[in-house]
Length: 148
Image (cartoon, rainbow, N blue to C red):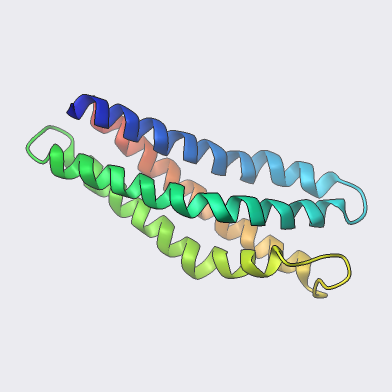
């Protein structure tokens, strides 16, 4: 049972990391290359869509890691799992304090109501997102190492 939990948790976190990685290094590049207002509208739509899904995914991943840590407390690699959990908590805190406020503004913008500094705000979100992706990759790497 513990083995199944370990694999499921690692897959769930790994797919989440893949989504966030692709947002940072693929989707944002595509949206930024679109003509005229299409890119900004795409960012707003992505903010609405992913802003609804990702909180559940982040919290669900954290819960799975917590269950793994408790269920495997006396097994090899628990320290790695606990550290991965701490990094996931950090990613949630970063999201709530740094990224969500920008995203909440961005998802309501249209070409008619966006602020003059909208590009700077999206660039700030992107920088914070790169940092969050690095934290998530580290957490995922720790979970993979804990499997060994």
